[in-house]
Image (cartoon, rainbow, N blue to C red; front, side):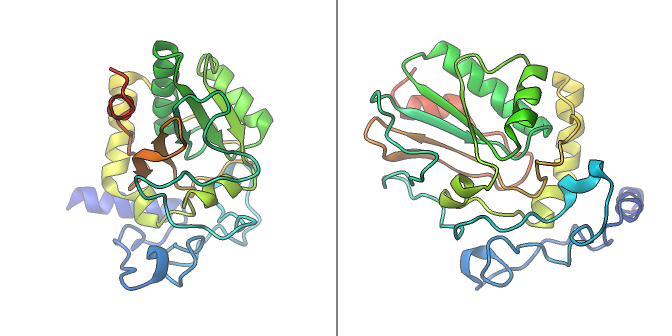
Length: 245
């Protein structure tokens, strides 16, 4: 009872409706969205959309649609999606592990990036890529804060065109603000000292992340879009699928 009351009070202070954590029902709608548009999946009118908000809160506003339609997420065994900014297979013939960051500043994105960096260092024969929709300056600043990119290649996709080609659009409120994600944020900070960082206005908190592994021919062998904001993919399992042990 008290947990529910505390959650409602926190939502009210943030200017978010008290029913924001209700699980959205998009059954029967294309791409699981409310109106068939994967970039309009919020179950209520985003209160930050048209507000003149301080710079620090711009990351909460609904982002503009990407320049291309949000596709379906890749099916295992099919060829990886290609776009002008990001093409597979890699020119050097290596298998690829690609992580789409939710946003720079997100503690779960940081956890994913640190693990990707560790994998890249352990398996130099594996092509490890992180894709960010924040500006290059913001992404570079964030990467510096967490210790550098090392062997990870970073692709900047401010228009979210690459995200869209892999089926990654705007999340639902439940995806971002469900109680279990809030608990996971506290647990990640307490256990691993990974806390949320300042979010640059060029990044957006509503973006869905994901992770996929492709073989040397560019076929998708493993991966999926994140089901909730706190999901951390098992990159060790991805490496095993690609034949790295």
